[in-house]
Image (tube, rainbow, N blue to C red; front, side, top):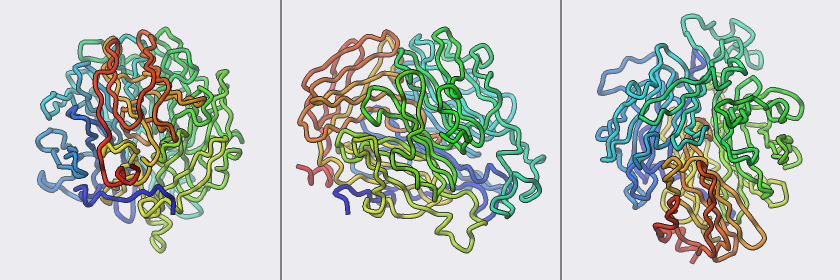
Length: 554
């Protein structure tokens, strides 16, 4: 077994309420199989990651207010456990809750919560007292019709200091018009009837909202060029500066159609360059079932690369950024050509062993339980961990990473962050019709690391889009603060950097997104969480907590 293992501590942590999503054994509609996301975020600014879990319903059940499943918020008790604060916080909502992203849209210093639905999306404003208010109508984000929102992301596309909002939409779903399983070509899989879609169903259109700076948003989808690629089956979106020009771009993972790379034209408009850039299809020129997204500089060349998960019988895709506006599909060269056994979902680059090289983690799970009713081990599948070898290749180490990796669920969203503040990254997983998994990283902090919490002043307060470069010896890493990602989920907004065997980072450079000014900090000691405020420098230092696995490393 590896020196690093993942242990599912969800039950001991108090995360025992099961997810509810569609029929348990059989489904009639595609909405019953897509599932939902979750979030790691610090809603009360106490320095510890809290948890938000999206939830759904079942068509065949009738609920009372007392029995209806709701999305839930859990507060971190700072001792390895969480308390359900849903009722007090005012975020308990019933419906088909699909995705979540986090950002401080009004720059009041507390992160707000945007939740997508098959139905009507919701913006929860953080009241700074442990409660939230539904601000959807007040912010002009309420739609006049039912839509299927999926992955969303806050980002400041015009660099005015206020977070704008991109919302992906999947299918224009009217269940009264959907064929029954097996009735059409898109309702069959391996010769057997399954729920219809997405092919054969009308695709959704994506939306871009501009933040007006007064607590309201304006739909700028048409004039920004977001609508030009046409309707797509969009699932997950992320915003990063892929061409290193200082302006945030946008990548959208699309199911069964070409994915989208929106280049920021720096004038309030975007152009989809995915086809010419080489990241719309895989290297064979095939569209894939784009599900989850992870972004990092896996080969330490200073350019951000893209990892995308897909359906069974297809590999995930690793796009290497060539630094000239194009990407190359290096999936097979990187050693991932045989990863086609499972349906992949939530994912991220995460340096699980703090060696300074971003590894890959993704969760899996099939979408047709009725198809596998005689062999649920095929429907429920394990997690996948790929170790970055530092030479452009990855090694599948899943089998030696402990029971938290080998356990089988049909999972969807996943979020990544250091919930126990012990210096290594943990994983939160949403399991369909089961309680969530909280995978504690045991042993990852045997190598040192540093964690950075960034606060904007001239830029948005959440510091989304801030680029950080950490140099240790001759090795340089980069990271950006991102809202959204994985599969319709939100990971820790703090940036975590493993330092290998080094006791300190020689240099930390922070490039703030609005001004593009760079602040530099030399000789940053490992083993701490630094709070850096734009223009004020380091305003806080906290040593990592001495959790049981942290003590093993000292």
